[in-house]
Every structure is written in structure tokens, then in C-alpha cells.
Amino acid sequence: MPAPRLTEITTAACLFFIFLVPLAGAGLSLMNVGLGRSRSAGHMMMASLCALAVASLAYFVCGFAWQGFIGSPSHILTVSGKNWNWIAAEPLFFRKLAFDGHPATVAALFQIFCVGLAALIPLGSGADRWRLRASCLSTGMLAALTYPLFAHWVWGGGWLAQLGVNYGIGRGFLDVGGAGTIQVVGGVTALAVTWILGPRRGKYSADGMAPAIPGHNAVLVLFGCLLALVGWIGLNSAGAILFTGGEPSGSAMIAVNTLLAASASALTAAFITKVRFGKPDASLTANGWIGGLVASSASCAFVIPAEAVVIGSVAGVAITFSIEMLELQMEVDDPGGSISVHAVGGIWGLLALGVFGQLQRPILNVAGDSLPSAISGITSGQWLAQLIGVATLLGFVLPLTYGINRLLNRFYEFRVSVEGERQGMDLHELGAGAYPEFVTHTDEFLPR
Amino acid sequence: MKAVGFLMLPAGWFLSLAAIVLFPSPPLRAAFVLAGVAVEALGLIFAFRSHLIPREEKR
Image 1 (tube, rainbow over the protein chains, first blue to last red):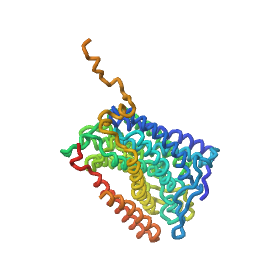
Image 2: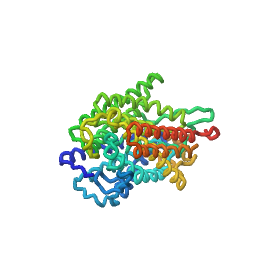
Image 3: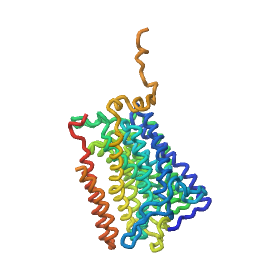
């Protein structure tokens, strides 16, 4: 499979979009901080920074070598005469990258931001109880193994991307902006981490009650949403150019679809909470916004704006009820709502591409010669390709990441001690709180 | 129950993979992929149920 070519203008546009992606990370970090307790706020921001650092280094050391790019050397299994490209065979430490504007170098830059974004997702679920070093270890494994493997299958010309060429299943598994590769991979890792950590103390009492532990700063949460929008526009636009052969001129529609999906999802979540609880809930509305962005990522280049609104609205409903079901019925304590927002929202986005997607131009990472030039998601079997991708995320990535994190937990316990949880992660692990002026010094009230 | 759940997840995935390779007919292939996803869903339910917190550990 030949490597794609990018013109200078396309490369410049792609780089511009890639430079927006860290804003998505900043947005998610602020949301995670705001949705956690005030006594763990500094720790959460520190963990976000460390996760980005560890993810970048791990991806540099071996992540890219195993992910590769379309047309790069890879290990191939032959099954019934068909090639199953399962892992890249690039040298470690970016050694083969010349950073001369070749699409592989642009993809490497994009991916190093994407893997950082995926690493931030589990932090929201482990808030208030996940030790810093443990989160760094888990992030290292995510960036070095889990993420690159699945991303190779989707974005590196792997077997999922080639389902169309090899077996005539649509155009193969498609994921423009990483709804599966970034969001669901991060979301199922968040689920694994939450299962291993268990709930925060006081979350589930013996009488069957599950009292809400509200986030400490709604302003941070909502500002994070606004930052994330900018980052997501960059993420979806750059992904469309790099992995589906889109033109920079298509970015206007991608940005519109991204915004509309987020808007529909947030308003749906606000409406549902208003109807059910009497007032719109800020944290669920924020989660709805991010869920809409996540759901838009898979299909933003292949749907019309009206379909993006439908995708966003369904995401808003699914995420709102999923958060409640996980918390109350499944007893999964996820302070940041990461599992529902990223895993549920991402899975819906992937399936929505199979339902609504109009694939009217050749897709970059499949040969596509034998396929008609314009096909719809339903009639071509694209829905089946998307379903196989979702099955891979649930049947392979989730058990893999659960196993890895359980193994890490045996060597280095993930959960902070009871005393540490009571004291707060800031004081216990960092030695200082994020908001020192909130502390009341008893000696100030002593008679002089 | 936890082990059963986590075994059913890859089992469902393998069923989907087998369907791709073994069945060239689209309806049959789709049916077996859907069956694989159903097995995964069942595995996920087991996995969730096995992580419910025992009453005596709730605090």
C-alpha cells in the first residue's frame, strides 16, 4: 500500500490544525480538575501534565514504531490468502523519520498529541484516589502498547482499515478524528482503572444510597468545554486530511459538524436534566458537550450538518442516561464521567458513521478501486465494518488494558491509602493544596 | 463470574473475526458478527456484575 502524498498547502493546513489539538487536552484537564474535589485539584493537574509527558516519551520510544503509518513496513499474517497487517515494524525512537514534511512525520506529530489526549481520559475516572506514580505507569503502557496497536489497525493501514479491500466490507473501518482510536481506547482504559480502584470512600453506603459528590468548580469545567471545542476542530480536520485524504477546504464542513454535534448533545443533556431534576445540570451538560465532540469525531467528514445534529442529540441522551446507570446500577464511581463520555459517546459515533455516512470520495487508506465511487453507509456494509471495529475495542482492547492495569496494580498499588484519601491527594502526594487560602489556620483564632 | 466475563469478551471478538474469514456471504457474515457482539455484550454484563460492591464493603 503506497504512502499518501500531501501538497505543501495541505501540509501547512494540516500542521495548523495539529497545533490546535493540545487545546483539547487542556480542556479535558480543566474538566477533570473541576469535576473532582478541591482537595485533589492540584494533584489532578499535576497528573495531567505527567500523563502528557509520559505518553509523549513512551510514544517516542516505541509507540510510533508499533503504530507506523500507511505504507510503512509492518508484520503481516496471511489467513486464507488475505493479508492481515497487525503491527508496524518501524525502528524505535523515531529513527526513520527525517522530519522533512513527509506525511509520516506530520502523522507522528499528530499522533504524539493524540496519545496524550487518550492518556488524559482515565485520569477523570480515577480522580481523588489514583496515585500519581500509578497513573504514570498506566499511561506508559497505554502509550507504548494499547494505543499504538489499535491505532495501527485503523490509521496505519492495519487489518481493520483493509476490511474493505480484503473482504469487501464497506470501505473498511473508518475513524476520521479518533472516536475509536483515541476516545474509546481512553474510555475503556478508564473503565478498567475504575474497576481496579473501586469507588471513593463514602460513595456507596451500606443502606444502598449513592450520594452525589459534586465537582468543586463548574467554571473550570465549562471553560474546559470551550477550549476542547477548538482542539476538537483541529483534531477532526487534521485526521480527515491525514487518514482519509480530505482537502483543507473540507475543514469548514468538519468544523460546522463538530460544533453542531456538540451543541445538540449539550442542549439535549441540559433539557433532560431540566425535565428530570427541575434545573439544568452544569456537569452533565458539560459532559454532553464533550460527548457530542467525541461522537462527531468518527463521521464529521462524511455527514451533512443535519445528520451531525442527530448524532449529537442521540449522544446527549445516551451519555446522560449512561452516567446515571453506571453510577447507580453498576456502582462504577467515575467522577469525571469519562467512561460514558468517551467510551459510550465514541462507540455511538463509530456506529453512526456506518448508519449516516455518505462516502462520496475515495478514502485514502484503502485502495478502493473495486468499490463504487459513491456509497452510503447502510447499503455498502460500512455499518458492519464499524461494528467489527467496536467488537475489537470491547473484545480485545478492554480485556488487554484491564489485564495490563491489574498486573501493574499487583506490583504498585493504584489506590491511595485511607488516610491519603481523607487528607486529599494534594496534601498527601504533593505536600501542598491547590487553594491554600481556603485553609483556616486555627492559631488565627486563638486569643492573644 | 469475573473470569467468565473477561473470557467472553475475546470469545465474542474471535467469533466476529471468524465470521469475516469463514463466511463470504454478507448476510451470514453479518449474522455471525452480530452474534459475536452479543457474546461480548453478555461478557460485559458479567464483568459489570462481578464488580458490584459487596454490601459489607460499602462504607
